[in-house]
Length: 93
Image (cartoon, rainbow, N blue to C red; front, side, top):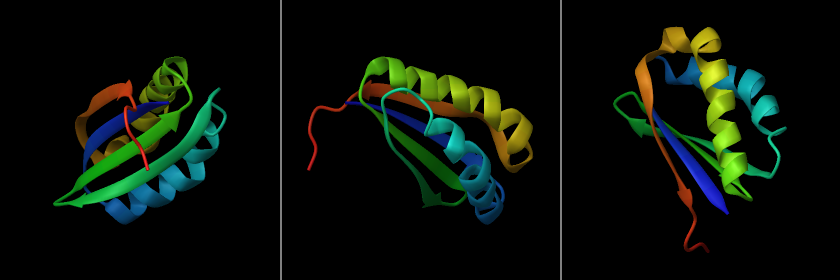
């Protein structure tokens, strides 16, 4: 399993959450190998999205989908570009 973690600096967490739930979640669910997606509020405007996919290709496709969707749909709610980390899940419970 592979994960993609993206960190955003957001201005309106509630609105960001609403828009991604309605607009991005249906898109990311269509990524081949999709397993799960989460939005985590880290406090102080920090937002983390976590996408789990069966393989590296799925994780990379989720990053591409987010890069296409975010600027036009929630770009007004985030500052700058997200920090992105992708990697293989090595342990889980």
